[in-house]
Image 1 (cartoon, helix red, strand yellow):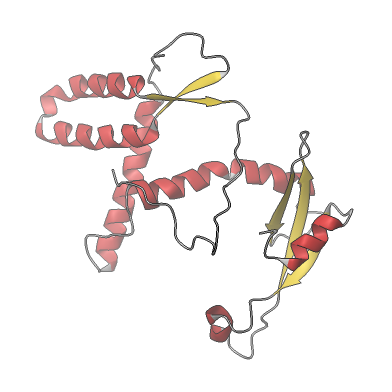
Image 2: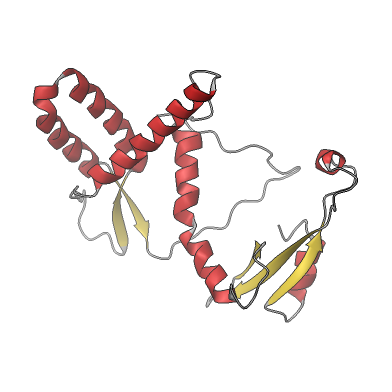
Length: 212
C-alpha cells in the first residue's frame, strides 16, 4: 500500500500517529468509469500508524472515522484479532474451493456454502479435544499446532464412514483424533515474515492451493 498511495507516503513521513485523508480511484480505471456522475468518487479513510519495538512501522486504513468511539489502540487490537477471519476466508476459498458451486440456483449456492461452513465447524469441535503428539523433543520455542487442512480432509473422510458405517462411529472418531493429532506443524511465538516483492507488475491473482 505504501508503494502506491501518495497519502500513505506523506503520512509515513509526518510525525502524526493518525490522520483522516480522502482518496479516489484512478480516473481512467474501470472502477471509476462505473461510478455514476451524481455519486462522489472521493472516500474518506482514517490512517493509523503503529511502530513496533523492533522499529517496524505499520499503517492501518479504516473507514471508522470517529476517534472518540474507535480509539487508535482499539483499531490496532482489532486488526490482530482479524487474522482468524482471514484464515477462515482462505480455508473457504482456497482449501474448500467454495466458489465452484454444484449448481447455479440460489438454493444450490446456499447448500454448498452452508455445507462447507458446517464442515469447518465440525472440524473445530473435533479438534478441541485432540491431544497433539510431539514428533521430536526440545524444539526450542516452537509450538506444535494441528494441520488444519489435513484435519478438514480427515473430517470429510470421517463423515463418509459415519454415514455408511453408523455402528462404527466412535471407532472412526478415535481414529480421526489419532490421525490429526500426529499431523502437526511448528511455529514460533511472535514469528512474522514480510511479503516478498514481485519484480515487474504486481501479482493480480491469489496463490494457488490444491483443494481438499
